Length: 591
Image (tube, rainbow, N blue to C red; front, side, top):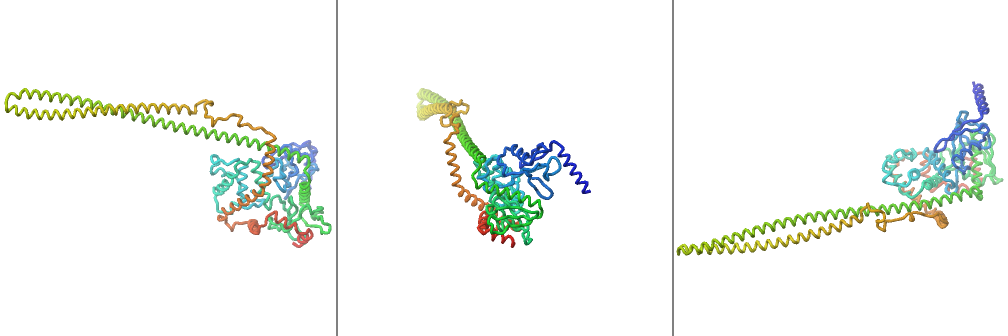
């Protein structure tokens, strides 16, 4: 059966070689691509095609990875694709991934696409817990990932629940605390709101600057044994080789920087590293399979080459790329400043419009109140006029009664001569009549005075009505002046702006000023690092009371111990490399 399977595989290989083309699928961190390749193509031909498609020039960081049995391998660029141990089915699947990591992402990653691909890969490794990340750093990294996706925080758009479908934190971190999804979102959003003003590229770079200080960042681990047969882990990264205990991938027991290594080779399962100091014994270890040794050698050679390359003058290609990147950043900076200016002018215009609308509403309210006052004045005037008319009628009636009383008095005087007795009675009646007439005359005079007073009140009411109408006319004139329907040339001078205010020229002075700002950013790096550490400590303090200690993983416990001892990734590496190479080799062999 084995021979039949081998014959079938040989037949398939022969048919593939006889064919003119073969298909491949390239899986990147964002999407998949398919290509039709010629049989004679080498790995470099396929790799260059992928890089051209992505617009990637910093190709030295990346490679094409494929799965082979229970491990992974990287496509060799100098050999034909079909002559390597690639999968036999079509399309052949490769993963376009970062093979080597920079020592300092901010200084080494030039292109935006390079930075973006690293950001996506590191983010995926952190979420899948291939890179151990403490909880407080996870929250801060999540806030930068949100900023890279959504831009500046806007409370009107980014309302509670907008991160419900996002995968932002490792499950280990979520399970470690008694916190709901809403509580995590609240803390991530609080950090996210502080990043206002950054672009997507800047947010991704801040993410990488934090992630590159994590202990497991950029390290490839391999199970090895020393001469005594002790199981250990070999870590290969941008700085050198590190030896770990199997249960502790955070803190290496000893390290060998690339500048102390003279030669690397392997024979079957035995791997040999010759230190630069020829008096020091060679550094040997065994791996489980020959294929693993090949992979270790590839990573060692590539990392060592990049380590030495960083310490030489940049090539013309890299210098050109950096110059173009500086120009592009300067152009983006000027463009961002122009957009910020436009946004500021727009906001000022909107504020002015809101103020005019507020003033218009205020004037409309005043006009409404004036109308009501006028209406009340008219009603008061009508009421006073009615009262004056009534008083005038009452005065006429009293005058008529006085005249009748006078007539009655004359009639009594005439009839008084009829008799003494009657005269006496008549005199008495006449006296009473005179008194009544006097009272009526006084009442009539009083009523006449009241009528005169009512006439004066009516006159004042009419005068108030005239003034109210005049004020209403003035208010109506002002309201017409500030109406939003006016043409643009009637706008107040303090809110008008021309297109000239919104234009900016890309001049040399802008370039010089931006260069000075870039230098200033370098000077402020230490202060930013201090602020970052304070931010992480503050986050840790906020959530520490909700931690479930019993759910801590061994790596969490080791990280906490390192933090308490003040041990960091860089300080530990510096401390280990201060030891002599000979003592480190002896220590490795005795583990």
